[in-house]
Figure 1 (cartoon, helix red, strand yellow):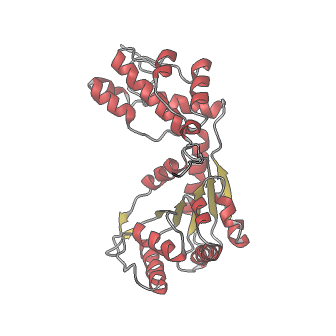
Figure 2 (figure 1 turned 90 degrees about the vertical axis):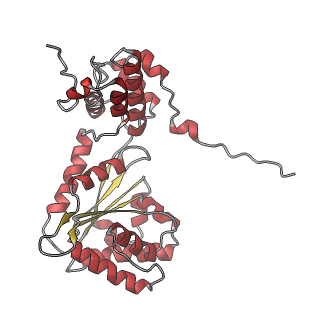
Figure 3 (figure 1 turned 180 degrees about the vertical axis):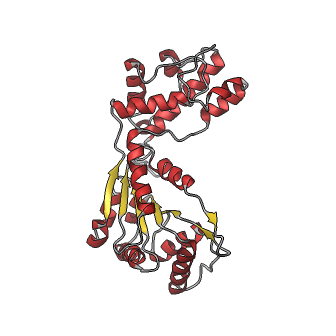
Length: 303
């Protein structure tokens, strides 16, 4: 009997698929649990089950771009989807996900919430009306957590509008009928955007997803990656120092780069018949790290 101990039990049946189907599976993103992600997920679960209380606990999740922050938060969202309310016509939405985009203002803050709750509204309505709709919709949805991704983009707002948004967040937390916890996620600037409101900042614990280093967490991540790739032979990414070091360096210590490199290498391993990831296959992966994608701005003479 063939030993597929390097694979997760859910991955083994995929070996019976065609090469094209296995390649497709390699390119499909799947959530990989690793120690730091488990810790942050536990903090999120803690917020969800807290009893309603004054000054609800909140969380800031900081991570460099492309280091798994949004994917982790969306996995938490996936675990707590909207469900039908047996006592009413509306659904229960325990976790709401919004994203700070465009030109942030108090008005767009209300619109993000209403859009996420699928509540129809007139964008030309007065801000006061939108606020009333937000509070009512959040109450009816039984929302316990609002995840606000890309919080660092609040820097795009004027100081006055940013202060209004922060004050409204605090107001929603303090509302006796809501008492919602906010999870503010973003790059290292996320925390700085809340510093203008000391009361709000004091309610937020900070959890970080730093750049990766070659430690137990990193090796656990590689083992998780490998267990989900439908390759017939073990690659030993997590135990081979040379392979682990190569992936870490080439990805610039970012999880998005690691996934890209490993998934493309797995694709090549299937197509070539190698059925495992080797150093030669890794070197053939065409990957451009973030530092190489930056555009150098030069002065151009205008004719």
